[in-house]
Image (cartoon, rainbow, N blue to C red):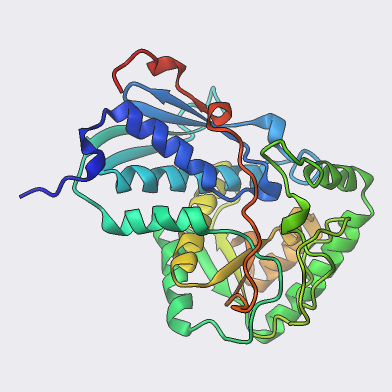
Length: 336
């Protein structure tokens, strides 16, 4: 006896369009949302949007690919939750480098309650840059989060106390380097003054002052309005997401792994804050490679912790309207 999901009486193109829309919940560097989806009669295509690339901060497009990978994983989960399986073709056409992925070979499948729970986590997931509580993250939770990343082809290395000190020094150095670069400062100003545009980081998600943390967070160059209490991050855990390659497809897969681990963390009540500054600066990225004994390429640093229950979380960052990121022109007029 098959277990049909409620969405299985709807056409495939509707499921594809809704999966692309759901992917808009994905995290992205500076909330740039640098992706665009195209719905086809029997496939879904993901393209990067160069206009929303951080050309000063991320000239090689590593964080662009990582952001798009997170959206790809969100779309995959949304389709699974609706009872569809898909074949993922990553970077399918060398002649179209901006075409990052194609979801094709779609077929009906049974209900997927776990994927449905993950889709619910997408809607509540957010980035809380304030200090975490004094409650430690359990070893079992860290293990589950690491397995979620491994299932998507990347590894999560949890730093020991000495490595956290090295990370703290590297993060401070990266922050100093970036603060002295006028192009980087201008770019950061642009993405923190985008109120009403559906992208960027509004004041209410940025700390009102620098928090007391072992590893310094990014200095956004302006104070936000998110109140920061007197807490510290002593109970926080720092992890380094890494893999074997430093190529466009590996950064795309790293984004899928980031999405998977972050949604798993959300389900387990663990706060995740990405720290990308240390991978943006060449010298400190090499420091991270040293922390991995040269055996892997660092994709992003993550702070993991239990959010302070005494304070409500910050609001969600804005999102672009669906019509700006999902192109359904190829299937208009089809039954839906």
